[in-house]
Image 1: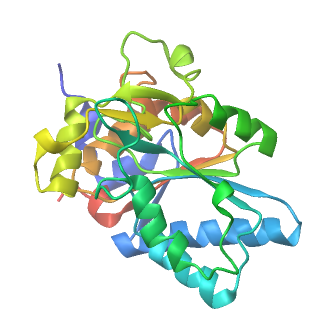
Image 2: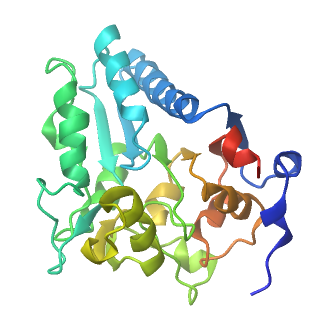
Amino acid sequence: MMQENYFNYTKEELQSSPKIPLVILPENKDVFAAMAQEMVDEIVRNNEQNRKTVFICPVGPVGQYPLFVDIINSKNISLKNVYFINMDEYLDDNKQWIDKSNKLSFRGFMDKMVYTKIKPELVMPESQRIFPDPRDTGRIPKLIQELGGVDIAFGGIGITGHVAFNEPQDELSPEEFLKLQTRVLEISKETRAVNSIGDLNGAVDAMPYYCVTVGINEIYSARKIRLACFRDWHRAVVRKACYGEVSAHFPVTLIQNHPDAKISITEFVANLG
């Protein structure tokens, strides 16, 4: 396949006319701080109006969560009217949730690093801490409708252009792909390899083969989409996200047409070095 010219874009070229708005921040910590602050600001604004706050939340990126927890606790901000819908979870070979005690478990991460760190009088009830369930994939689309929609979908971008675990499906048109809702699917070999480097020191054979994920439909339907990119390989991913053709081959490109989407990146990602 011919290499696209945009992969070589300088920082100035990258900023010239991206199809998804970009915010360039100095370092990783600044990207995480901005995400945490936007989470807090949305919650405070909705609390003041006695409105629910509904987020789609990732486990990756995760650097925003300690900052978020600190702000919530220090300012005594109530989360009682907040719903966290997590994007995804790994499944075992029987296509059921991996055990929460597994180091890869996103459910375990959220319990350990978020929910148990927030003051009990502030944290949302367990019924408002939601994960896609392989036994009831219709629950999240129905819940989102009942709650009146998602305020902000937060996330990152994977090596294949996936948002959540919405892996490429070349056989689908963009319109068909955008209709995909919460479902169980097989994780691509590329994603398993990249995730194994960060999570298991490269033990790709120990990575799960399956996951359950919210669909691109639920993400795209959010009123705002906020993505964060800060890894070395995000240099190419961001350039393709912002300048590539809209297609199910690189799913994040579908977000080019969203009315309020933004990607926050570091100076490292903006510059090719």
